[in-house]
Amino acid sequence: MSHLITATNVEKYYGDSGQTTKALNRVSFEVNKGEFTGIMGTSGSGKTTLLNMLATIDRVSAGQIYFEDVDITKLNEEELAEFRKKNLGFIFQAFNLIDTLTIDENIEMALSLRDVDKATRVKEVAKIMEQLGISHLKNKFPYEVSGGEKQRCACARALITEPKLILADEPTGALDSKSSTKLLSLMEFMNKNLAATILMVTHDAFSSSYCERILFLNDGEIFQELYRGQQTRREFLNTILDVLAIMGGQADAE
Ligand SMILES: Nc1ncnc2c1ncn2[C@@H]1O[C@H](COP(=O)(O)OP(=O)(O)O)[C@@H](O)[C@H]1O
Ligand SMILES: [Mg+2]
Image 1 (spheres, rainbow, N blue to C red):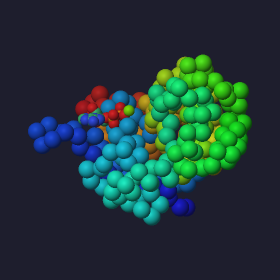
Image 2: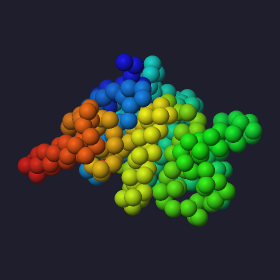
Image 3: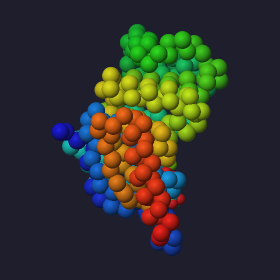
């Protein structure tokens, strides 16, 4: 099995010598190509910090992160910008769409930044909107569509450049339960049918039950790794809730 990511003993401290917070402590894990992985933990457990390390938005304090054969913790700023552009797609809680552009223009933007010619851009945008079932949003502005529709647009924008890895930080965080379910089903579809490798950070057990595998973070450390295997989504949700109960129980005992 070829690993897309191999993280070894990743540590992250915030602050100066006077007052430091250890946000990640010796975090090691792998992500395989084609996986839909969840990173689950309560608020403050280090999820966003870990995602930012993988996204190369912020630097590790110690440890290595290999992306295929390259240790991305060793890249300089210029190499990092190139790395992100070539390999990563992002879906954020806050949508991050440009208000003055229509939905299709927002998706097209990802290609414009990569010097793709206009005719190809238009064709690719139409194709991805069709695949993700959002063709009817063409020509609409972000303020004219729902939060759920915005987030499906963000999925199209993340996917259109065919990144090796899609990073999603609490993508259902601003959505109601119906829109969340629809988005998670779409992400599952992207993973199963469009070969997207997805790493999703969430504090929500329901959201994480759509993943194939979950890494539980507790106080900046990996507490447990869980595979869905042959379980139905409902069964997996119950397993996840059991782990959370054990994690919560341990935290209470401290
Ligand atoms: N920029 C920062 N400066 C100082 N401390 C931070 C910073 N970002 C996060 N932290 C701290 O690191 C820990 C992990 O935070 P974070 O990764 O945001 O957790 P999560 O996303 O799981 O809620 C928390 O204790 C948080 O207060
Ligand atoms: Mg967070």
